[in-house]
Amino acid sequence: MEVVITSSPGEVAADAISGHVHPGAVLGLATGSSPLPVYEELLRRRDAGTLSFDGVRAFTLDEYLGLPRSHPQSYHSVIRRDFTDRAGIEVDGPDGEAKDVPAEAARYEAAIAAAGGIDVQLLGIGTDGHIGFNEPGSSLASRTRTKTLTPQTRQDNARFFDSVEEVPVHVLTQGLGTILDARHVVLVATGATKAAAVAAAVEGPVSAFCPASVLQLHPHVTFVVDPDAASELR
Ligand code: F6R
Image (cartoon, rainbow, N blue to C red; front, side, top):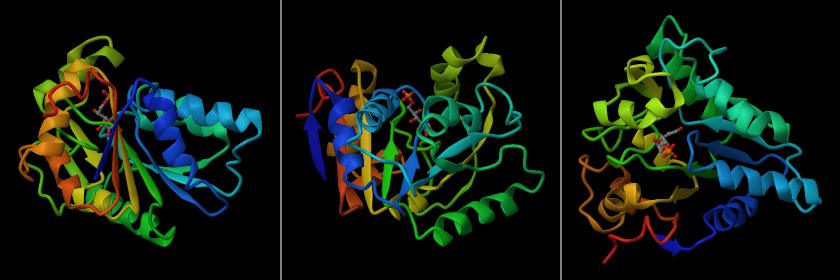
């Protein structure tokens, strides 16, 4: 695992992602606030003519269950708005409107495998150490499945909705085992609210109490953190 402490996490993470971008590449994308500077930098490079997304496809990490795909805060809508529509990248994600959720989870795992697996997976981290929506207590070998969000995560995500009550309780998320299958994992964390989770993930024991700590077992992980998010590292 490498940990890069930088005041320009968007650029450093974009460097790591760009190295994998070529025709046929498969990107794993995260939603939320942390990846936004990365997406802006990747799009800036495309606009400058130094990067092309031709022949690139992508998969997202997770989706709220029961939220219509057309809802502006469904991750289906968010990733298109934030990045893939602007990049011209075809993207697949778990279907939060699926009637048969286990079948949808199996379809999604099969789709990633059929694409040849994920070349580079971009991640954020929750204040409770979640990656994807694998909350504390998640099996370290888990595959795509439904999970229940903690009150903390619903509170953290309430800023995207009118109230915390509107944040869905259940989600469909890639498992920790699914994420570990990516060939390179790039995790971006910014701000002091992420400092404890970053320290637990990087320096704590590998434990389901901090799901991101499972990344210590992966052979190629890059944490890109700003000084505030790094402030609890020893
Ligand atoms: C989003 C996701 C989550 C977020 C995490 C951090 O697809 O899987 O794990 O990355 O909740 O969210 P932000 O970046 O908004 O602080």
